[in-house]
Length: 369
Image 1 (cartoon, helix red, strand yellow):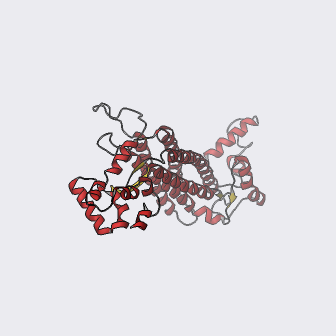
Image 2 (spheres, one colour; image 1 turned 90 degrees about the vertical axis):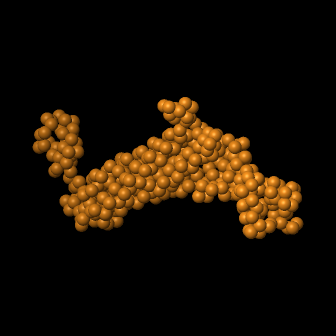
């Protein structure tokens, strides 16, 4: 109603009248002609969400490109993969960043679907979707005209009653945004772990230093950008729950809880867009690899024994692994000491690149055996 009054008074001014003289332009009879709060407000919410989603997609595409560049840059860097925080088998650092980019592209596809959800409008449904007091010509022209004026493609809902009372489209969009936030938060966790140290942690990568990390510990640098992304994600997860509960709380022909839905939706999409932009510009593009540290961790790991398993069997391999852990010797030195394989055979099997690719590492040795 307030918007109708503002528009009416501005129109009166343009026409040379005095504000408040509603005989010239009336907020209800003229500005609100053929409309209702119950179709205008949801339409405005969807148009705003679509605009924000377009910007979020733009930032996600930038992140996708940045991750792909790092995947190429780090493709030769061999490091230890880990499962449940324990040493697993080798992986290339480039493969990890490539996996991040694939996950982001999946989120981009979700954004496309989310934007489609926001293109269906209930304009013309007026109070409860029946279209009462809306002229036929208005019903036919309102959505095409909105598309033309806004430059965004919209369609009128197939069933205006359904579109007026059900807000599941916002739940779907919020879910897509939350999924993206979860992906980014998990990736940020990984960046924090891989950069931990510099001497008592993983120390596999370096994140750009953005500020002093402590007022009491000189030289300490914290992973502040990934931490920002984590916190944005936490907030988005909470917003998603609010949107879910608000969408469920509608009764009969209308849901009265759109204000909180829009508040949470706009905040989630907007803050995630800024978080992605910050992550790209202030973190991803400046990441460097500690190649020597990565190499040392691979060579000293017991996990590389997995590549030997096809040659000597699981039980023998497990026995070697236990001995390596208890004696603090390397897997390589133990295998050579016990004459299980000669150095040439073992070098082929434990070739770092081969261990990061599908198949049996050094399979020509297996054929020989």
